[in-house]
Length: 112
Image (cartoon, rainbow, N blue to C red; front, side, top):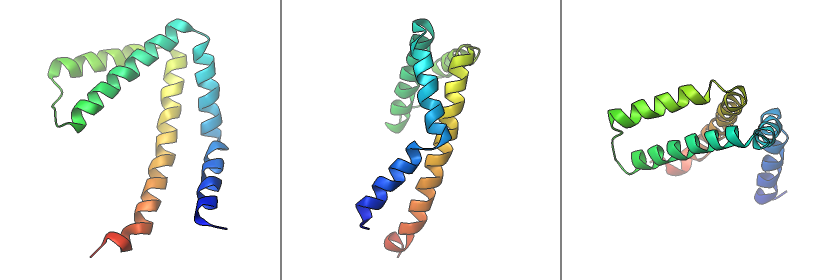
């Protein structure tokens, strides 16, 4: 089996995880409620803007931080939004574990 077959198998295994299936189900459910979907999408868009600013070396102002904290507290009060954010966190743990394993595997290549 070649390396790329293994990558495809890994992707297929990831898509078979309970977390992946749960996320798709939660996302589909959220789409049935336009107001909740828009609320979470707006929050995630603002969250992405903050992350891009951070990656560009820009500090987040106290006002922006307070705004994001306020938005987050509103979003997590909604059960559907909270569930999808919690599921995303579990998926991020899986992806972090994968990244750690890959990092350890290539350590010998990049270490001098």
